Image (cartoon, rainbow, N blue to C red):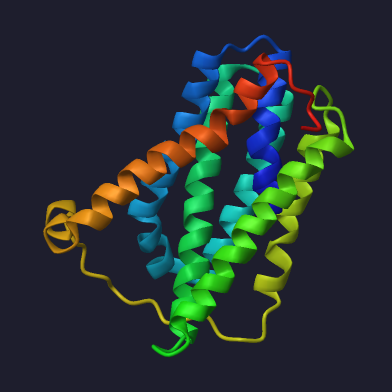
Length: 216
């Protein structure tokens, strides 16, 4: 999440420096979250085929490579495709981690474990964005740093002594059925995600166009 946090703020700032307009950057970010949706839909098939550890390693490695593609090919079309792949990989990584945590948690500890997990995830993302100050967004170094940080995530998972959770076949629930059960949660989540994605993805674009320094 540190590497992803760095990339999330690095791309808009670099895009502004390269003359990529807000509309094109919005497309790049939209593709990223499209990758999330696509990944969440099909990642369970990969888990059933090869298991949690192999899926995590493959997705983290692919996400790391996608960051380097963004550094080499600087244009909105390539960024959209690479960031779509990154979103797909991120969704898969989160599915692996959260299913693993749910398998280890009991009904008495699940809330505390997932709450701490969210604190770590959001804190790491925020910390990653602060790393944009250690280098020049116009250069190659910050992309390499983001790629290295994502790659390092593979080490503790692949060397873990604990066994991966069993793969179970989940029965899909249509959105309409979920809305019937918890309508307020669905509506609230939609608007919350709408605002959060715009703020976290395009906030750096707004700040740059407003004349704010990168350090701010």
